[in-house]
Amino acid sequence: MRRKHRERHLIGRIGWLRAAVLGANDGIISTASLILGVASAAAPQSNVLLAGVAGLVAGAMSMAAGEYVSVSSQADTENAELSRERQELKDDPEFEKRELTQIYVSRGVEPHLARRVAEQLMAKDALSAHARDELGISELTTARPVQAALASAATFSGGAAAPLALVLVSPPRLLLPVVAIGSLVFLALLGMLGARTGGADILKPTIRVTFWGALAMAVTAGIGAIFGTVG
Image (cartoon, rainbow, N blue to C red; front, side, top):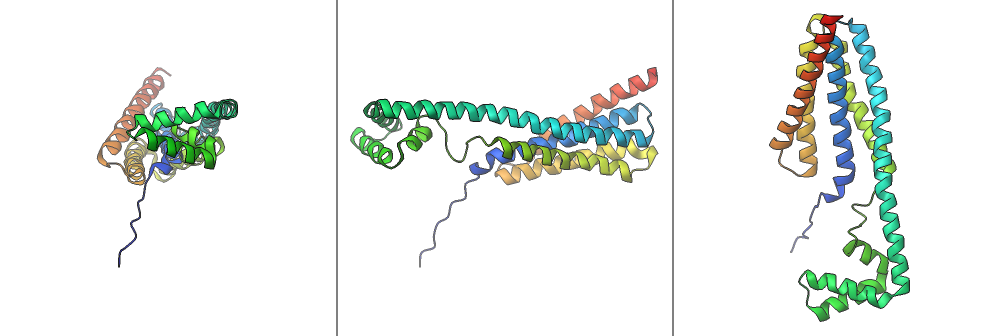
């Protein structure tokens, strides 16, 4: 008895995965950097915690708004292209059929077969056929502003909560190393999780996210120490 062959493609995750990883990564790095900068300036632990909470709220709102505006712009462009294509199909369907045929020919399909494929696809759903093969717009990659905004805000908050939790459990004299090392561990785990979810290699994304996180925290902590000394 033959077993059914099931293929699992991960490209459908690319939209929400990008927003989710970006949100969590930014949440950890920005909040940890803010905490380390304030703590390096010799601020009391209560002030450090307050700064971290403020950074979480402001960052989550900023991420949501920025992602919504960005993805909405993409959606507007896609809708404008689809509207233009819909009108072209109405005005000159034969030209659009030849255009679709030529696309398939350029991909290696024989001309007569390409013509038949174009005719059959356009008979079923002409706009979807042209959106997918001419414009590169499909159900898997179409812009979803609300989904992206919510994912960014939620994952930023989740990421930012990690260094905040470290502030709560850390003794005042160990706050800097605990937050710095703990946040780098969280970043490494995030890099591994994002790579695994997307089906990519684990090592490179983990090193990449950890390196840039360490750099951001080091620079911010250095600036905080300088201003703390001046003050």
